[in-house]
Image (cartoon, rainbow, N blue to C red; front, top):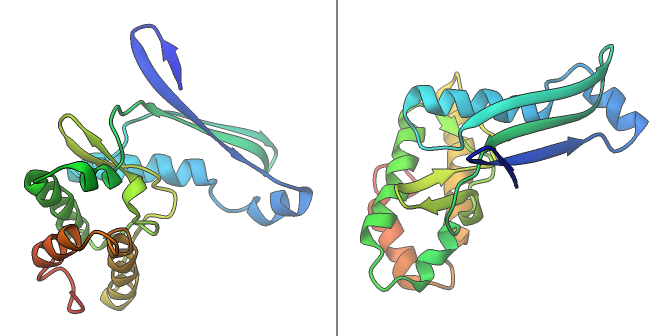
Length: 177
């Protein structure tokens, strides 16, 4: 977390762990680049996610030593904080609204846990977009999105009221739910 002028920003560094890791990643996009691209995709689609500011990749030819993603800082707790709210109806509806938007766009998050949602004053916002993927065919989307929903629901196994509320709101998202 850094302050630049009157803005709070987050700088996330993606490291290359070893020469073999560098070689294996040399001809693929960096996780920072994937997050950057997905944040812009979410912005275009109107789906609340982190706001990208800059992408920096340090390279020597095709080899990358590190990459940085700079985004606006999002103030607020993660979605696990819903356990502490007596009646989180608006918050649960907003979260499921994001899942419906992802489903309508055939996008899977890849790591859809509660800690990857920041509950801001304007509503939930998705973060950690480096595993996100837009699917061209329905079959791959169905499998990936079902995995997303299972991961999301695993957050609420010990909060039955929230789990049941999410299950009701998720009707129609996927044949399994």
